[in-house]
Length: 504
Image (cartoon, rainbow, N blue to C red; front, side, top):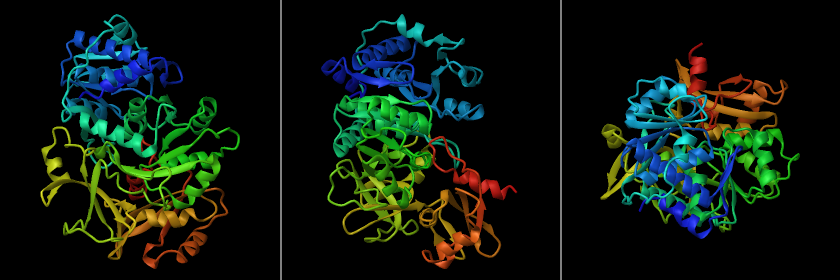
């Protein structure tokens, strides 16, 4: 069944409730359903056929949600483009997906319209080129029958960030979207009483499928911000009485460093955090600042993203754990990445996933699919590239990325463990640990540290680590910096950190 049918279901049952609101406008479920119908008709009038790919180069907004679901209603395959991509990066994604149409906003139309990407149509909201979004939608018929789609047909493409190579188009089927939305709603106890906040970008799986599509599925309202800003987020939480949201750890650190005491955040009930390991010292600080439950979870673009999550009211919370596997939608396997043998309880290995939220593969990349999927005892598993372990209570812990693991003097060092130790020290505002080439050790453990003031010294950092870490894990080089580079999803950009010093 086409996932876009879920919008029409909610619109029939609760037409006048607020569905999505951005800083410029808000729409009810009935209004959103009508706008998506008109957009589907507009695409049909332009000649966009079922199965065609439609690019969305849009910030978080009502228009994004309407275009995404409207394209899906047409039977087309929407795919967002990272708003930080420019020039050749945008052109590559458009050509890789074989896009026939693109939707963007005024000020960004040149980033798409001047490219040699073979587009048949450019739709622009508030711009001067291509088809005007409002005119196109306003003149289209407002009745549309959702194009039928089977569960295992592709519903959307979501491109990876491309920080370690070319972006890859991850296929999400209608089954993936249904399983992900139903699973998150069930595990989090969400209902139409929830007031959600989406600040993670919708061009990424976190903004699109942790908050936006599950909130729509359950009939809850969703307030969206076009870009990350700590002050704007706090003001919106206070003004709209936000109850639930998702943050990347660096966003929470921004909020804690800013301080939340100037805002009334008493409406908050649940904060979901994921996308990177959450520094353990910051978990208690977050719960104290917001007086609400912080729930760590785990997922990938390739798992739509639901794979593991802590849930409200579970028997035991373990700091640093991403929770039990979401066993109603996925199975997990942890294996030695070199031998492929399954490891035991509390032994570290690569996390592999199988289930209803797992992508069928990368769009048009058979060689990537061959490397990403393995068969074990008759089941197909997705290799995550993440190192983790499961304890005796069935709680998962992600230790780090295989790609980020540092091999220093023949020993494995996981940066997240070093970062956790450094965050315990007063005066450390933010930290990123990477391995840099070293003639004798192979790689040298290097820490980039943002400090509260100049009083914190390299010797103090080393002394602090000596009581907490094995000698070979202690940073041999410390760089004090004003800030840390971030990816478009607000994760610390470790590729850029390595290049910063390697290039010197």
